[in-house]
Image 1 (cartoon, rainbow, N blue to C red):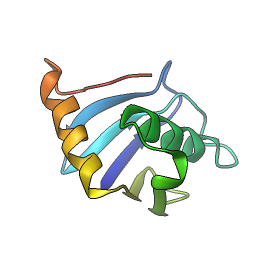
Image 2 (tube, helix red, strand yellow; image 1 turned 45 degrees about the vertical axis):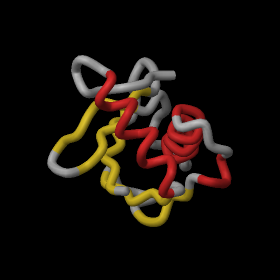
Image 3 (cartoon, rainbow, N blue to C red; image 1 turned 120 degrees about the horizontal axis):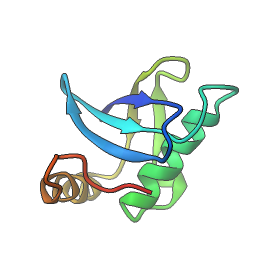
Length: 92
């Protein structure tokens, strides 16, 4: 799944779709992998997954990332995004 990380947010939250990527506000600075760790933690928690079920595949030093999640979690993500009036979905 293509993700655009938006670091230094006040809290982690899905921010909708932007240019074909899932935008995710990340409540951590892009310093020494902290934002990547928070991104994985947030996505896993929001989708009811364990952290080891969410994998950062590419983009460790970029805002544009590819993460791997189980296929069943994609349906949960779609539901979260569609339930939100602004398409942003869950926060945490």
